[in-house]
Length: 285
Length: 266
Image (cartoon, rainbow over all chains, first blue to last red; front, side, top):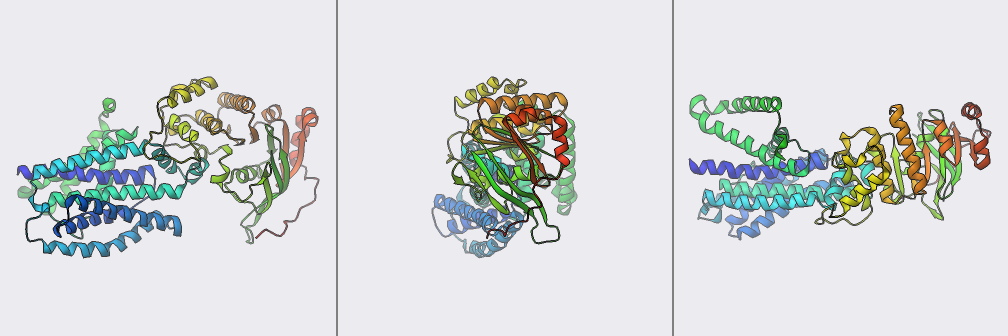
């Protein structure tokens, strides 16, 4: 029981990173990027496959992240070179990556002996997730406030304004999508570590979750500054994940598993209604 | 000095919707000269400005900056020395950045950007605020931390002007930037515009909705009609022009007969 609760915390940290991906692509770069689903699964499956095969976990983390970055680059190159709409470009990447994800996911069956994946306790995993998430978020924050990050944010305002300030739009897209999907892959790797398992469908719905985290976060903390937006992502992911976790725990015996969806959505509606009505937590940040 | 030679801009060439918006325009703007472009709606003023800024391409003709042919330069290349303030303020200022961040990004335009260095290092903030204070425009320095989408259009257009100043633009292009503002704000904006272009000696080509201001503030007046230059008055001629004559020229067909589009390049 206590492990499950700790896992909910760890999961919400990991999902907050997906929230940061969605924030970067939809709010900063102002494009629709669905690559997220693929990079979560890619990161999770490649990390799991590597650890199961006996590779050093730290190296596996780095390789998983680089796969995510690669997926982002692929979408960016389709957009900038073939001039495809970002939404379609990311669907193309999503489909292409599915091949690798399916292949990698097969390796899970090989997992027989105890590996790093299964030997770390829930508390240990939480600590690991916390350290990784905080470090990455700090770097993300620094990047968005750097000269480059500012240029990235200008780019979200359209091509004419960004070019008139001498900003290379394509370059911004490459770095932006690379970082965003690297974050998602990292989140995927963490999810694999937390849940001790990985599958080809682990990324499905990640984008929806990330979007939910961003939107709930925005409702609680108005995203006036980058710091507020990032904090909002974490708060949103935590609330959403906790809500799901709470329903799963308490509702399973009372009403049956098939009604979870409707209960979560009703709870979310009440939550958002109460947040929107009340005076927002303005002075907080 | 910028020089425009036989400029033609044709929209949808070779189709039923073909429209020649600018038809053989020639003029020269000396360094520091302020030129007002007047004319009726549809006379090609905005098309001309959008071509100069690099938003649209010409079908024929050349644009020279001093001795360089910059006709084929893209918006990104051209904006290293051109800056614009347009009716659509989203084209010239970034709405999702604060006022200060807009100015900061303008100060490092066309440069290599660092992924680590903070965009607003110590000292830059104060320096930029001081510039705004020196401008002395309706306490704009109090708004530095507001996002540009949240400030009123008047401030936003002044922000566009300040971006041009901080970029150190050689040429400023203004297209109807005061249109849609109330009288008071419009007057304040135009006065500040004049103050900036005169004090910084920026070569300016502007389209403004107020012809009186256009005559008083500029060194040269160019009247466009049907995409052609109907009048080009500078110096003494400009000083002696009567407002009625000027308005009349809006509707007189240009002296030059209908110019045919030359064989397009490439």
